[in-house]
Image 1: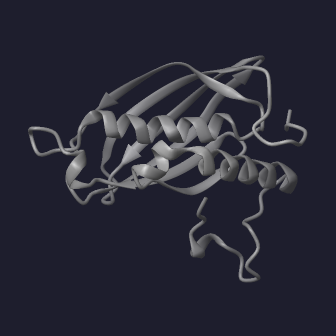
Image 2: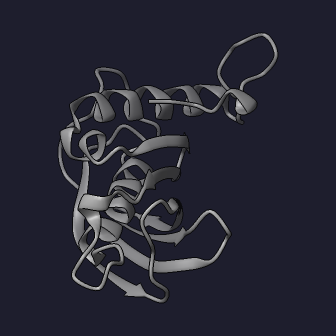
Length: 164
């Protein structure tokens, strides 16, 4: 997991959030998931930030991600949004999977574009949750809108108590 240098406090510690232990747990969960996530790493994604119920990731559109129209294949944009969804909904250290999701593509992405996905929890009740992910390019233009519905299954990502 990478946290941008401009997000680190001057003492080099991780960014803090209230409560600090929930933030630290979300970061440990993200690190463990990212280390095991060959798909996200293989596509060059990086985690910009993560916290309880939210995540932000980036991915640069490469030549091998272009379709026959010379724009980014929607599947790659979907994977970025889906990975962001996964990091947001697992941030409480309660193993959570996708129950369903939709995506609307609203603008093309081009080779060299740096896509930024921001995921936000909208609802989390019982075993289910709803998360919205907006994917924008480096100019701030919205490329896609994704909604993921999550379902919590048994287990934890890391061996420590989950955040309720």
